[in-house]
Image 1 (cartoon, protein in one colour):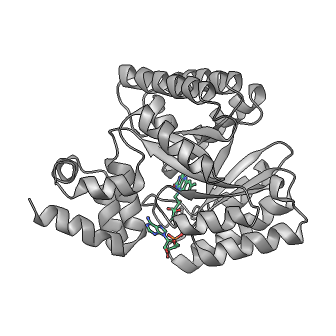
Image 2 (cartoon, rainbow, N blue to C red; image 1 turned 60 degrees about the vertical axis):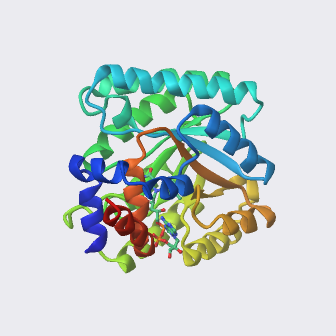
Length: 305
Ligand code: FAD
């Protein structure tokens, strides 16, 4: 219930204005986000890499309705990829992008062209790109764009969401040689017609999808902070005799950082999803929805208005 309310607020311009200007928001934002500028993301990437962690950088923004904004997002990705290359942070750092920030909502072709330019730059920089998964109305379009990109840039990564009923079948399609697939639970508010609604059903789906990916020929990326699912990930990797370079764990910046380090010290590849930019509102609201304890911060932020 609380999760639904927060996720609905994530799409409200009124609540966005209220939260963005509340003083305490800044401290919550600092916990989950590298900073506003590319230099902040570079600095955090250096620090994470020094701790033995891999990184995927996300330039914040989504649901863009404006072609100039989509171009600006593409250009920011080109800039950060050049900077990562110059700082010798590739291939340890890659980038994650949302097609809706590149124009998917108004023209899928535009989003594809921008994503293609970013993949070409990533390839020049010696790294790669992963396409984030957004709400279910975009899934078919995103997987179509992914297939086109993979024809030219085979390492382009997919993201699948265990809460969607379709995802186990998508995993079967995607678990092929050379295919990088991030499996997450899913962060949006979705209707029962397309998504499992209970935590138990989502977790069971996550395990079924993980089994398919670990048994397949691709490169699974288990994105979760859930201790039980991380344990199952370790177990399945052993069962399918995958060495540490044949799968990875992924977690969000600011969430369970001690667990990220623990897994890295055990020899696993751990990639941290590192967002930066000024458009942090929707991203931060999804993080709050994942953990009721974080909501106390938000309530305080709003009361202080
Ligand atoms: P949960 O059951 O939510 O959490 C398990 C435990 O982890 C909690 O009990 C708590 O201890 C800890 N925890 C989890 N979240 C938080 C938090 N915010 N603050 C503090 N502690 C927390 N979703 C998409 O829809 N599309 C994507 O492209 C996408 N990419 C992702 C990339 C990465 C690397 C990761 C890690 C997640 C991504 N997600 C994405 C988000 C994902 O779908 C979940 O919403 C999120 O990871 C929470 O699910 P969980 O598996 O961690 O399990």
